[in-house]
Length: 196
Image (cartoon, rainbow, N blue to C red; front, side, top):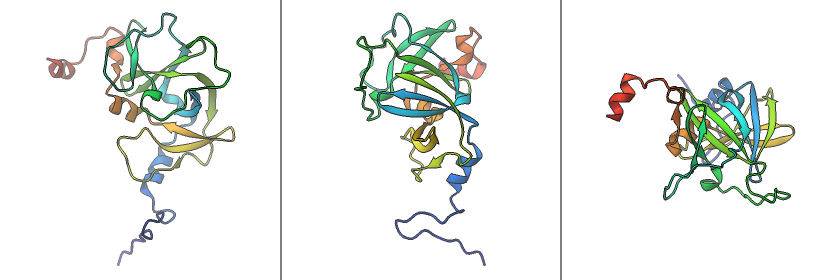
């Protein structure tokens, strides 16, 4: 007879039985890039950060849209890269103390990747790269909410830091550039068929 321990009504699952937490630990990255968006410190799996650089000198090229997280686009590596601003979607305080007088002076552009998808992320600061703690990330939200970008956190430098899920960002924003297209390669046959 198999007995499955069930959590008490409204309670946490028994230790060792949480498959989501085990899956999270199994896929934990070796290091995290630490960034700040507004007042919010964020962690991004380092293997998903292709590049962190200065904000484009000419700013972003506008994309006239009525809503969503897309802040604009910029030239990147011979192509156009869509850039997402998390503060357009998430309740992130953007009034940063001691911020530069001219907006964008210290802003950074991160190029994130998930598979062949690339997306730019507007950040106010890049704080560095930290090795992942041995304890790994902690799953905070145990119901898989497809419309959320943050479901876990990790302790980095003594600070609890939310982990941005890049795959969810690209799926939810429905904004990305295909890496092959940025490098001038022809789209694959399936992508061409979908587009036509």
